[in-house]
Length: 190
Image (cartoon, rainbow, N blue to C red; front, side, top):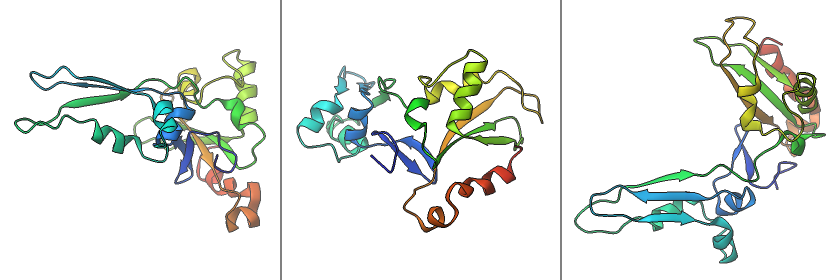
């Protein structure tokens, strides 16, 4: 677990994303399936990350494992197409409550619109509950569909939602604390 983030998740450039390790897929209870589309091949593969963790492969990346499962045919190339099933243990808002180093950024994806808003997780949950659209059990991935009001600038309802994360082990956090998010807030339209 990274400094308050649930297992299976990591921070890349300050934004929480799903980690690509086998152990992370196992923590999220997420299967990866593949099917070869090459002529004459009918391979179907299901990668069970929990089984691979049990064999000591949890630190490998899913990409490394997928490469090992490719068809090794001399005459033709492999055409396995991979897709990850939805996580059975997704990132929920409740897992982020009470963490001062985590915020939710709601950003407009309208053409050239730069509006965004940064809020505490607790504020997001309160807003969802007020509108009777969700609660602390709401998946972070479901949030854009729940944002029904239009952007105050371009009036479109095309939202992206990201979870922002600042490591509490950095010098910036030690000096500024929760004020680390103020510079991001001043750039947007809060």
